[in-house]
Amino acid sequence: MKKFVLLLLFVSSCMYSQIKGIVLDENNKPISYVNIWVENENIGTTSEGNGSFSIQVEDQNKVLIFSALGFETKKVKISEAEKVVLKEIAFQLDEVIISKSRSTVEIEIGGSKNIGDKHLSGGVPWIYAKRFNYSNDFSKTPFIKNTIIFTKSEIKNATFKLRIFEVNKEGAPGLDLLNEDIIVIVKKGKGENKIDLTKYNLVLPQNGIFIAFEWMIIESNKIKYNFDEKESNKNREYITFAPSIVCNPVELENTFEYRGGKWIQRKKNIREGKYKNKVTEPAINLTLTN
Image 1: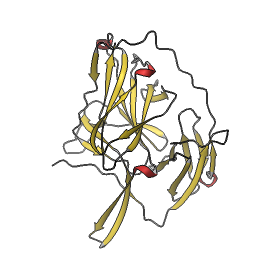
Image 2: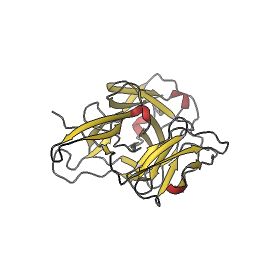
Image 3: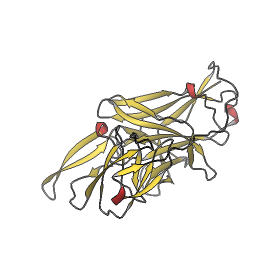
Image 4: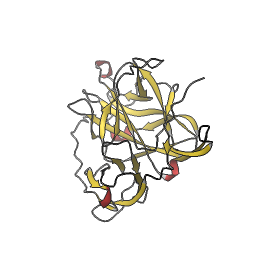
């Protein structure tokens, strides 16, 4: 029987206070699904469709980091986060498309399988990014047709955000390569989510590309668990957010995770067990075409 990794958030501590606010653009319009983190901590959330958010914090002197596609990343003291205005930025991409795809030949890369441990949100808006490196074998199929992401959800119509990043000079995720959010709706149970990317005419760059899964910490994705603690003889409530993403054990360190407002490379596990000398990589594949 497989062991599943459940990263759950305990939410009944009186040490924390709930901070509520709203994220707006310069025209006073709400910004949906903003990625929000307490700086350098594993505490975060996502703004709802109407731009509102709430987050439980212990120290109101901490700083929140607000990040959204098409807007400048902004740091705000928690005590000043009741109304946060993000500045829009001009979206500029290098021209990489020289012709449209014909889609007569296809190959699937990534090696991911819909078998493995599932990783839940833990109540924070992590981003798991998997790097796809270029190979001369792809010269005849340079266009990205779709991406395939394996998930499992205990609720219907859970959503996650698909992100596509360039590879920066340090080999980590850099700028977004798309100028629009891609929100993916997931069916209940285990599923293979195939997201069509043909309209973007993306070519796999020679320095590679990152395909990423972003958890959305919004009300419609919420799942509550109740556990009986034998030691205290009390019933505790835990909260996490669907969907979970399937992760496969691999040897290559091609995975980065975004938390605390920064990218961190996932390293090989040095502990004993089935994951020793392995990296838990998000189960993501790409279909390339001509």
